[in-house]
Length: 356
Image (cartoon, rainbow, N blue to C red; front, side):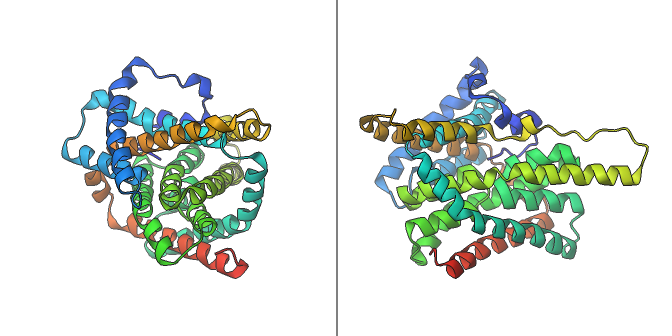
């Protein structure tokens, strides 16, 4: 889940290997702040389990960010917590899920995922034209909503080369509806009497960023959280073919506009690939092979859950509400329309195929 300011290095962090992600000295102030606030959120979540620690974490982070505004010394650690700690938590969750379960869930959710992605892109195109939002911003918001939020936006940015202002617009818009989803989806799920698997599939296909999916899923139930996480990671892998299609499309347009142009498309598969998904599968394979003793599985799950709270707290600490308000209403309306279309289409497809 992203911070608001566009920082290419931070956005591309998913391409680094886990071994490259040790905590540098400059990260500690912001990381310790995130962990301290996460402990408060965890305690509150224990007292009010219907809300849950992840939701408390992001709310506390937002309140601290916009009431106290931690100084620049905290920024590197906050970004580290929002990106790397989240990815570590996903890998840790893999140790509690069998590879058979992961494969089965991914295949079960693929039809719903493909429908919601199609709905997202079509809605972004049609509604974007109605609102007079230009093409590149339509693509950014459509991709961010369809696949994996800020990570998808970061992946397509070097391909379509939008202005930094457009990137900030898209990121802040996506972030706004991530916050709404974390708070609203569990309540709606209970009102609609969704099953754990039904809610997990809904959250995994209709919420943008991985952190928000995990937060909403585990706020509903552990089973919903496990299912939503796998669905979301399956969905995130689709960033690869989408980026390839965009890269080919941009190259074709460039050649059409200037047949003799030698400027290459800035595209790197290694940079856009979400490597933490690969490590999640490795962890799941280790669990499937029986190398994780049952006695320590609850400990690993608790560690993963707490890291999720830390990551969401850091995300809240990076949320500048004033900057969100300054992005303008048209991109927000576009983001709302695409998000609503994806959320409703996900539920409708599940009703048709009998998954609710």
